Length: 107
Image (cartoon, rainbow, N blue to C red; front, top):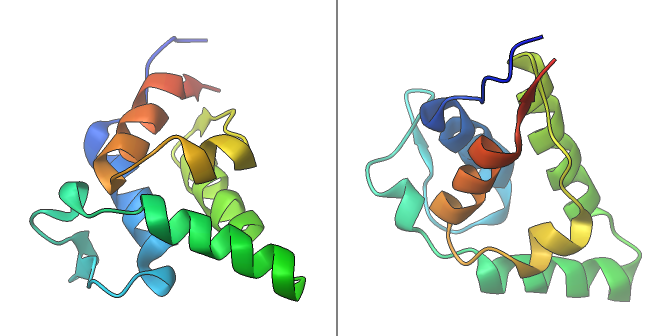
Protein backbone atom coordinates (compact mmCIF):
# COMPACT_ATOMS: atom_id res chain seq x y z
CA UNK A 1 0.00 0.00 0.00
CA UNK A 2 0.94 3.62 -0.43
CA UNK A 3 2.38 5.70 2.39
CA UNK A 4 0.25 8.71 1.49
CA UNK A 5 -1.29 10.89 4.15
CA UNK A 6 -4.77 12.32 4.39
CA UNK A 7 -5.03 15.82 2.94
CA UNK A 8 -4.92 18.82 5.28
CA UNK A 9 -8.33 19.96 3.99
CA UNK A 10 -9.89 16.56 4.72
CA UNK A 11 -8.30 16.46 8.18
CA UNK A 12 -9.61 19.93 9.03
CA UNK A 13 -13.10 19.03 7.83
CA UNK A 14 -13.11 15.81 9.88
CA UNK A 15 -12.08 17.68 13.03
CA UNK A 16 -14.62 20.45 12.49
CA UNK A 17 -17.45 17.96 11.92
CA UNK A 18 -16.52 16.00 15.03
CA UNK A 19 -16.09 19.05 17.28
CA UNK A 20 -19.03 21.08 15.98
CA UNK A 21 -21.53 19.85 18.62
CA UNK A 22 -19.09 20.56 21.46
CA UNK A 23 -17.90 24.12 20.83
CA UNK A 24 -19.64 27.47 20.98
CA UNK A 25 -18.08 28.71 17.74
CA UNK A 26 -19.67 27.87 14.41
CA UNK A 27 -17.22 25.54 12.67
CA UNK A 28 -19.05 24.67 9.45
CA UNK A 29 -20.76 26.67 6.74
CA UNK A 30 -22.20 24.84 3.76
CA UNK A 31 -20.54 21.62 4.92
CA UNK A 32 -17.06 23.21 4.91
CA UNK A 33 -14.88 24.62 7.70
CA UNK A 34 -15.39 28.32 8.34
CA UNK A 35 -12.45 30.61 7.58
CA UNK A 36 -10.18 30.67 10.61
CA UNK A 37 -11.44 27.35 11.97
CA UNK A 38 -7.89 26.05 12.36
CA UNK A 39 -7.10 28.82 14.87
CA UNK A 40 -10.06 28.10 17.16
CA UNK A 41 -8.91 27.11 20.64
CA UNK A 42 -9.99 23.65 21.84
CA UNK A 43 -7.58 22.79 24.66
CA UNK A 44 -9.84 23.97 27.48
CA UNK A 45 -12.91 22.50 25.78
CA UNK A 46 -11.30 19.07 25.59
CA UNK A 47 -10.34 19.13 29.25
CA UNK A 48 -13.85 20.25 30.21
CA UNK A 49 -15.40 17.44 28.18
CA UNK A 50 -13.17 14.90 29.89
CA UNK A 51 -14.05 16.31 33.30
CA UNK A 52 -17.77 16.08 32.55
CA UNK A 53 -17.28 12.54 31.25
CA UNK A 54 -15.59 11.53 34.48
CA UNK A 55 -18.02 13.30 36.80
CA UNK A 56 -21.23 12.29 35.04
CA UNK A 57 -20.32 8.94 33.47
CA UNK A 58 -20.65 10.49 30.01
CA UNK A 59 -18.68 9.53 26.92
CA UNK A 60 -18.29 12.71 24.87
CA UNK A 61 -14.53 12.31 24.40
CA UNK A 62 -15.00 8.67 23.33
CA UNK A 63 -17.64 9.70 20.79
CA UNK A 64 -15.44 12.53 19.53
CA UNK A 65 -12.47 10.21 19.10
CA UNK A 66 -14.70 7.64 17.36
CA UNK A 67 -16.01 10.28 14.94
CA UNK A 68 -12.49 11.44 14.08
CA UNK A 69 -11.19 7.90 13.50
CA UNK A 70 -14.30 7.02 11.48
CA UNK A 71 -13.90 10.14 9.32
CA UNK A 72 -10.28 9.24 8.64
CA UNK A 73 -11.24 5.65 7.77
CA UNK A 74 -13.95 6.86 5.38
CA UNK A 75 -11.17 8.65 3.46
CA UNK A 76 -9.21 5.38 3.20
CA UNK A 77 -6.71 5.97 6.00
CA UNK A 78 -6.06 4.63 9.47
CA UNK A 79 -5.19 6.67 12.51
CA UNK A 80 -3.74 5.81 15.90
CA UNK A 81 -4.82 8.57 18.25
CA UNK A 82 -5.47 7.99 21.93
CA UNK A 83 -7.93 9.62 24.26
CA UNK A 84 -5.12 11.13 26.34
CA UNK A 85 -3.53 12.69 23.28
CA UNK A 86 -6.86 14.07 22.11
CA UNK A 87 -7.51 15.73 25.46
CA UNK A 88 -4.02 16.94 26.35
CA UNK A 89 -1.91 17.51 23.24
CA UNK A 90 -3.77 20.08 21.12
CA UNK A 91 -4.55 23.74 21.77
CA UNK A 92 -6.24 24.48 18.44
CA UNK A 93 -8.30 22.72 15.81
CA UNK A 94 -5.42 23.22 13.39
CA UNK A 95 -2.96 21.42 15.66
CA UNK A 96 -5.30 18.43 15.88
CA UNK A 97 -5.84 18.45 12.11
CA UNK A 98 -2.06 18.60 11.55
CA UNK A 99 -1.60 15.59 13.82
CA UNK A 100 -4.17 13.68 11.79
CA UNK A 101 -2.29 14.52 8.58
CA UNK A 102 1.06 13.50 10.07
CA UNK A 103 -0.23 10.32 11.73
CA UNK A 104 -2.61 9.00 9.09
CA UNK A 105 -1.57 5.94 7.10
CA UNK A 106 -3.14 4.85 3.82
CA UNK A 107 -5.01 1.56 4.23
